[in-house]
Length: 430
Image (tube, rainbow, N blue to C red; front, side, top):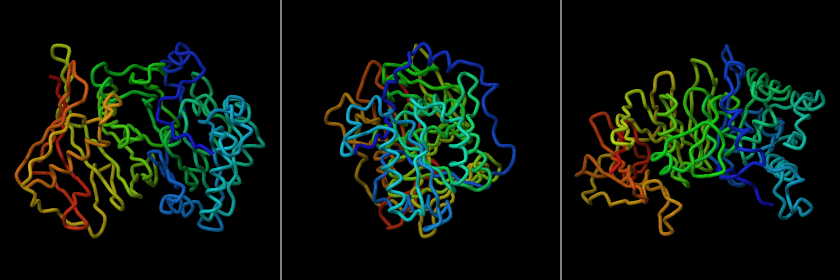
């Protein structure tokens, strides 16, 4: 069975005009943030969650009560319904909400959950989101997992229209989170946890060149967003997914600048951001998994639009890896135990890079050149600054990475720049 990882390129059947209307509706009637300290937690994966990732599945199950006790409700409304899946009758190739729900339920059971059940809601069964029977099913669970696909299907199936108010099922999940349940998700299932200005699609180069607009667009390269956001479980920063494989740092920075956000959480694939007490002053985070998390601090960001070209300076880039913690209220990274400061020894010049955001137009492009350039600079004993450019031109954008006196690279093997704290980033057109 194929599992949709939700790259943000799916086009829904609803018209762009309707989606724009919903996106620009007043946000005042949207669901409200929790006013008290949540006892629950989030486990948000940037997509591509592998079946054998015992570390992440184990984290979810532990937070849901532990092996043999956890009861996981699986939501896959971001997938197409059976009516839109030409392979719905073939268990080996189907990729719809029902078969994906069964698949994830089986995975959680194999990883040690006492029970895992599909919550039967999708865009063909929106009424189930207000069913007392399904609410009772939700209330019997100790944790929830939102699968990938297209996050807008979660908006249309679990929230009520332009008012963006909770369905009964979403209200029950929100209450369970406040009481101590874990809410997890991968790809679209993580993205839907976002607060205001949830990204709906777009590529980094086009985002830097053209900027963002509210709505959901047939042109997958156009940077779109929903002003009301998703479910609002995580509000301390703008959220993006599939960062490494799709080079989305550029679009995240442009969207944050356009919408006034001061922080970005950019999630990598097969790796989780674990958030305790989400939405409160006690909110704290930890990275779990083989890749990492980028955090952009934009409090001192400066944006210019001279001669029609967009530029950004004053952004601070942290990159956290397994075991690292982050304190949003203090804007502070707490490195994992055992990591020590890297003392650069490499005198080799940082390699030139002409595809910083891994362009789809570059058939020979190498994935994740943004992080690769940053890490090469962190290892360098002879350079304080390095640049990388976009593959596209007209204009071509240059990303400049700089090590100032606050920059700290950390390592757990003495040679690799695993964790980066306080690197300066700017973007300029040419």
